[in-house]
Image (cartoon, rainbow, N blue to C red; front, side, top):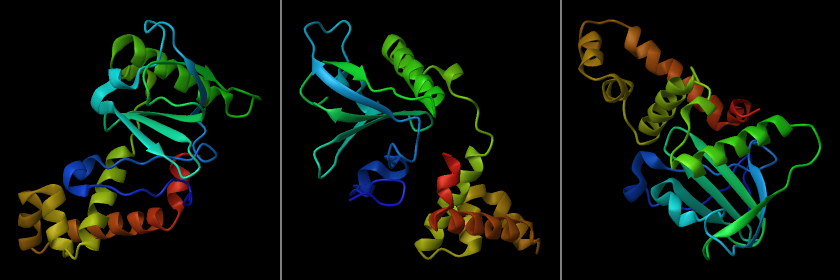
Amino acid sequence: MPAIGGYPFALDEVSLGDRARVFWRPDWDKSVLLVRTLPAYSVENAFDLHRYGGLANVLILEEGFEVVLLTDGVRHLQLFVLEGSVLSGPVYLRYALSGFKHLESRIMSLRRLVGLHQQGRFVQKLYPIETKAERWVYALRAYDGYAAGASQRDIAIALFGERAAEEWADGSDFMRLKVRRLLGYARRMVEGAYGDLIS
């Protein structure tokens, strides 16, 4: 059953570690490509999931739909399979584009898919630099530490290294306040503000 904005699913955290994957619902993330599959008679112009190796992840929903996430950990591309399957070998993709609202973001996703297909990697120039991404990562890591019972000092050292330990020992509030702000930001994200990231 879909959660707010994304899909809940079990993770093997031991093997995935910090490579945990998030699959977004297409009604929340307008860059998700909606596709239908057709049998491929030639592999040269077909989508073959196996071609993407470690970049590819597939979530199968209770309703039978497949959600394909292609990611290198920084850049991502997601397909929502309305009909057919990408799991049984190469297929042709028929793209479901309609209306004008959010069409630009889906066309950009299509360009990214073409680039990935042609080059075998994500084409960096098709992904704008997200200046806040580093803060998001730090906030989520701080929250993970907090949820695991780590102190603010331990979180600061884990995130910023020995420099944080030295500043903490010198009595500076800088690192403590920085961790506090990150935890506050992370709490807001966890409570639902994460939807603002993709709106």
